[in-house]
Image 1 (cartoon, rainbow, N blue to C red):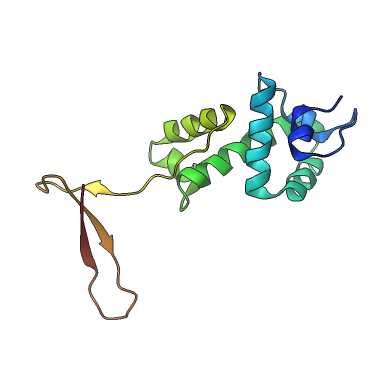
Image 2: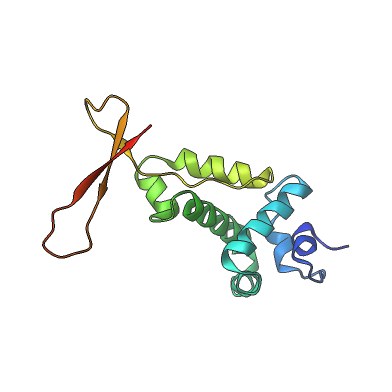
Length: 143
């Protein structure tokens, strides 16, 4: 019988399946399928399988977790990824994104906007001109 990772990727599964060992840390069969599909859409099916195959079998579980967190991190924070979320103290957003993926949802990208003091409901985002010699402009966005 094929594992849930192979089932969602529509590939043959064998007793020496590289995905089966990667998904042991995930409890529910549906969540295994959701995680495999999300990671394979992000990195590509053939690249995922070849990357996992190139790692020793005892490290494949950790590799898949790392790939899942990086794919979610890049989805939530496209510029800095999981490392950016970790370094800014927003790791909880990556963890929530992983829980969303395991439940069958899609994580949502965050926007890096900050409220300026005294702006009373108006967000300001720096919008840099691409022309040399011009000062950056501030763009006011109403909430």
